[in-house]
Length: 115
Length: 115
Image (tube, each protein chain N blue to C red):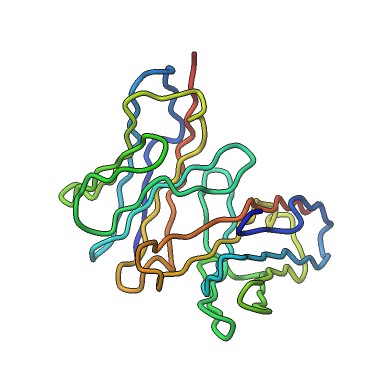
């Protein structure tokens, strides 16, 4: 069975600083990987996804993530954060054989932005 | 208008009561899902449905039941609510046949409190 680990429960970053959120997955085959963001009081919004091809994927709001098979990682990055990026971020893995009908989510990383 | 709607948005109920959470979507997707979110645990899958005649248990289905009344509607029921079912519940949809977007789209969530 697949699993996802987000080792950082809470990260605080200064506005304008760079950001990297970590995600490690466990899955026997080629994974489908996703990053979602949940703003306070909101549902989840897809930031980006990786299915195949280029291992560096670009998403919305200036985010990118890099798939590293050798490290079983799919870390999310942003070169310069904005106060509006404060939210909770979830990494998820889906089974590749049937699409993402059984997404497994990590426990999330809460991002705080300080002025 | 939102593509995935959930009603109610907030609900407080008492132990032992039956409660139904409803999800409607206008995306025309065949697949629908129910998750619960608990602090520190991320999202966990309760039930999912690939079409009107197909319903499957997720990882935490005990104490819950679902009904897929139509392609656009998927309801979650708690037959006899208990306090540890207090959580944020999300409905999601997906349409892998679309090819380019094998992605789940989430509703805004229902916050349920069981006293």
